[in-house]
Image (cartoon, rainbow over all chains, first blue to last red; front, side):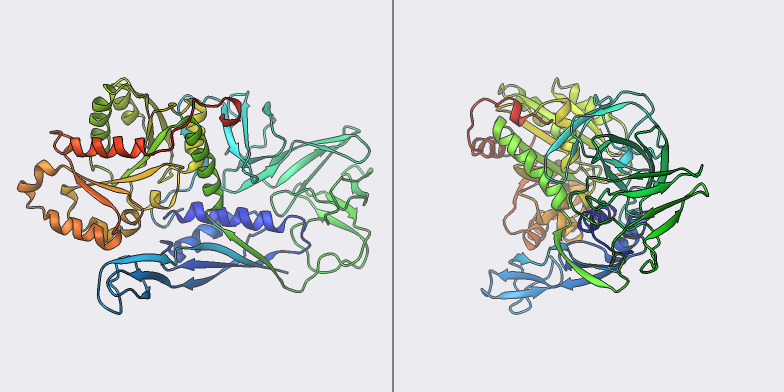
Length: 113
Length: 412
């Protein structure tokens, strides 16, 4: 996916959320990124550093929490965890998995000082 | 730059026919249509020029050369009824005060006027004069000004400006600028901005009864050839047709579409690697979506980035070609995972390439059990009956609506 556009959206969210707040600088930005969100954290960090330049988020660090991908297996009927969309069911080996979660990309918290 | 494909530069997006007028989607989901009268002034230039332009909505966003955005309004009404006009040179900007003098300063966060409502404060101008004024700020505290190292012992303090002069002003209250770290809960979806614009597009399409397809593929899969043949076949049906063409550069594809007699709007994304919902909205501001018709959005040739951006379409169609090999769905699972239909193009070459059709279908199933797969050849027309039937079924399944409503569905 397009990490720089995402980084820009994250900076926009930080600016929106800090409007009218009293603080010196944004120190950390906490993200929750699902394993299936197709985001390359390294590229996102790089994109964020440049998108944040000259803004309230300049110099802030991204803290990334990864959440697992989840799927329902049509083969064995179980809810399972997967690392990628192409994974087979870890329980029964079936390829008939319906992804049910783990594609989120959210800003959860900011730390300011 | 994007680690995946080097895209980012919002400033370089151009839409043919747009001229100076274009549309911004604001934070509340409303839209602002505005134009820049002066040539040479465009969003994306951080030159702080005073080019004349007018805005129908008060608040709007400028995208600066470094990719950051500045949200501002041009005229501030002060408590005493006078107004402050200003301009921005990136974060640094100028206030023209009621007496005609100016104050140049910068805000750390790209500009936010949020002064305490009744808190008058002073600016010391370079010539030694002092100006006292206050902002109608709705009770919000003063925003941070760049480097803040701790609590100010005196209420009055000085900021050094870029030109070497200083501005001294006064906060008149305790407890500002806390140094201890604290957390602010946010919980915001990063895709929310695009999703909001996509949902506005979808509402408009429903209102006009327009069936919209988002066509995605790698470069060279035969997407445009397939589209041209499809349009030629559909023209006889009498439904109004339109195409939005996304490419980084050139209007070559739009010209190929126009040669069929169908209206095409070219969107050049510059360095951008995908279309987003706002670009589609801007394109539609040029040419309205065909009422009770079909709109094909041909995305930028790229099997990665377009997958994540909802444009407001009814269905996503991914085009793969047999020359690309059977493993494409496994290599680019995110794209195939969002497809409603996979069109396997160039099937007239299957024999020559010893392409394994069963393996391709198996790989599609693996990442997307619900996608339908159709085999076509844009060159020979093979498989087009099934593809056109799918189109007819899907577009007929859309909720039938009356003739387009006027003003409220127009982008403003």
